[in-house]
Image (cartoon, rainbow, N blue to C red; front, side, top):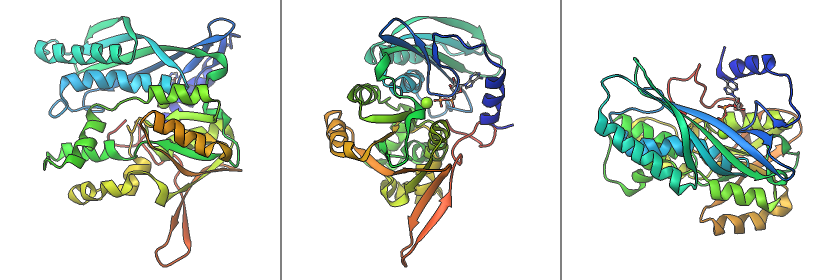
Length: 337
Ligand code: ADP
Ligand code: MG
């Protein structure tokens, strides 16, 4: 079984439904009716040593921040604001207290910066290394929630920021490559301390311009396939429009990686992926500018299913490749998000 099959299996056994549950398994957050006008958004993500981070090169303060960012990212992806955090800590008995002090400072600073409160958790000994699980509870107005399921044929597919930087950073860090190149700093930072696009997500939700949205944690090929499946549509992506790919060329040369593969299959970008009607184009570009983030159209939602990458051949003509679910899967790939 792969990760998707495991989730589908457990989802089929869950239930019964509750009228207050507006969305259960299958989106970035569960959505629960709070009162007449508002919903709670709930999400959980885990970081495991050796899978999500390597203490040899991950500073504890940045890891604490990342633990918060990867979680609040899912709240932003539904258009919400993060409010409360629960933290489960698993550490070996001989853990280094100064490592933990730095981790805890990064985590609590990040909570404050995203405007949320740490309200509880759990602490246990873990014989096999460090594990951190966070639950984040967010909130938004009922009408502002953006689900994965709203994409319609003819929508433009957008992404924020750049793609593939986290994967490039991870590959460089694993090889101990630090040529002091300013461009590489962005890649390191994207792996070690990604920033969640919470303000952007909340403004996109409030704008009413967005049909479907999610965050990019497992790579565009897999995450867009999830969004398409939830919406009952397919997607065409234009390889030449993927933002950031040309910036990855030198890092790919040094590590033997492939910039396009990092952009579509590399996890942990924590950018937002969303669809909108074509008429929203210029208003979305303005909104991105107001948030200080480039927003880039990368393709179109089509009838049918699956995700197709379209590449223009240098000699003319075009190549179409099916790429759905080629991103990160915990039970298939070796490492990542
Ligand atoms: P994301 O990448 O946005 O964090 P995931 O791919 O981890 O989302 O999960 C997709 C959906 O499956 C979410 O609704 C999540 O809550 C649900 N899910 C994941 N693992 C489990 C599990 N073990 N039990 C129940 N639901 C799960
Ligand atoms: Mg998500």
